[in-house]
Image 1 (spheres, rainbow, N blue to C red):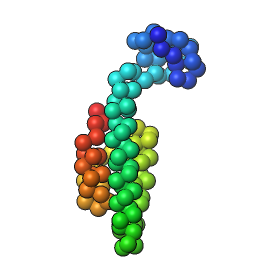
Image 2 (spheres, rainbow, N blue to C red):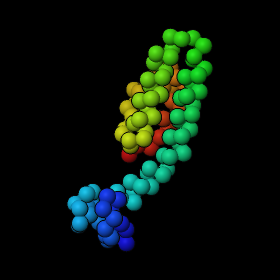
Image 3 (cartoon, rainbow, N blue to C red):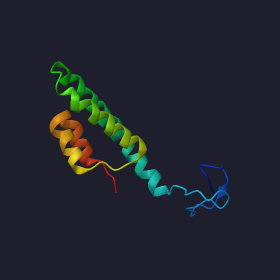
Length: 108
């Protein structure tokens, strides 16, 4: 048995909608996907921050590295997909390691 994240009602393991409040419930596959990406997301954020710090010596790059780091962090926290173009720009302009990790990140 599992419990609803919103109201706490007990539900069957196969349920995708709570019978008490009607809210959608995350499936075990969605939860597993989030857990797989959690460590990778932390590494990406660290390398993007390091990229911002290293580009801090030249003030101009901060105008795109900081907003890109904030945007990527928000998207990862909210579970939103990150586009391939953004990933490649991260690879080229912020941090090579963070860009590679973003490209390896599973967003199916």
